[in-house]
Length: 385
Image 1 (cartoon, rainbow, N blue to C red):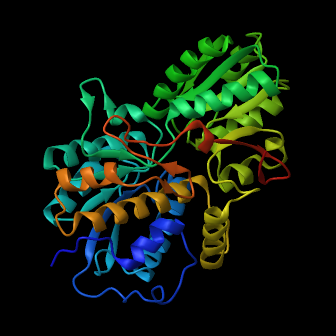
Image 2: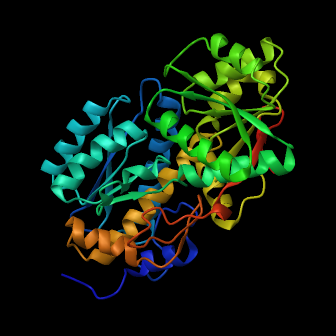
């Protein structure tokens, strides 16, 4: 049976963005029943990028409970089935193909640019909507045009670069930057965008050094940067190598500002760098220090469930699940890619924990520069400025 309006619970959820995890639905909304609406999720829960995939998994499990506490999807419960691609693109594609065979309503994932791209080749050919959680907008904003079924829940690289370099120029008095990045898709794409933004900001790029993903030593790259005349190092990676790089920057006595993309913002980075991370800047979206109501509710719920503070990556996953649920609710059990994609674009501005999303035919990210904040590692805590 179809309904002309959003379910009462999700209507309330859309209005408030998030609510405390509850055991039952909102007053006046019936608990969901019937056959579940299944969302497939493909994450990198193990391997090199487990520090990203694990909090995403945790957030999706919380989101499933929260959505069902608010009436589910058109009165039916949502079930988020999570699979681990181990950070491997070929595995991600295989899992996506499996989910297509299971007739899932939508796919959330991946954790990485490469895995998200592999999944998107499957979702595009199968005409199934996908919401991914990496900042590489070139996946949906491709050379051939907008990829119809692909949407991004993470602020795109262009927003990050503008925020970081604007901060470096105005607050740190930066004039010459050096870029240190991984040689994967995320690092390589991000570097091109940083180079373009540096030109826009009137900053010189003194050096550009790449390292293999998973590298355990970047001394050679840092030695070149040290002699480059740069005053600021921009680290663009989501690899644990970021922490190694910061430790080696201190060991080599390099006296430069250090700023990183959102990929470095994790408790894993804080643990690995210890006191060497003090004073490192990065861009964040989940405002830890001055949270709004939606963010505070999510922070509290995550801490209650897992005894830890969530990362940016958890925030991306939480928002991806809620955006997906709202679109599926408005699709009224017609879950083909055309219907669900149209529903995503038609959503009213959604205030999530990452930012306020407003998708359009030409913008499948929907976030703005105002959704990106600057944080500093202060006493092994990410403190939002």
